[in-house]
Length: 73
Figure 1: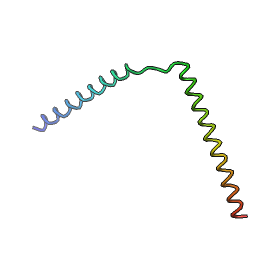
Figure 2: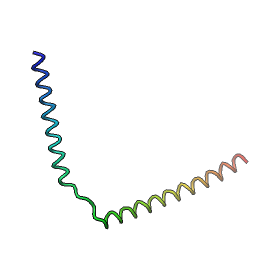
Figure 3: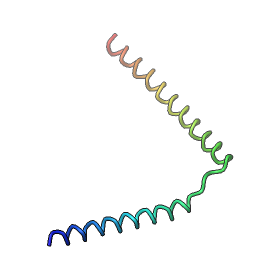
Figure 4: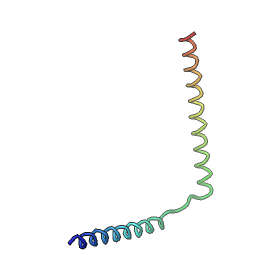
């Protein structure tokens, strides 16, 4: 009796895995790569955001350093 349960559960795992991989392949066929122009534009956006956040952190660091200096000294 236990053999039948083991066989049934392993078959369902195998069939579910096969279904998963089949669906994954179908979804991957829908994926399109960005064009060179889109890639360059998005890279520029990321760099601008990085510079902006870096400047904000720099200003905050200077401000907190100055405040700590005033509080301690």
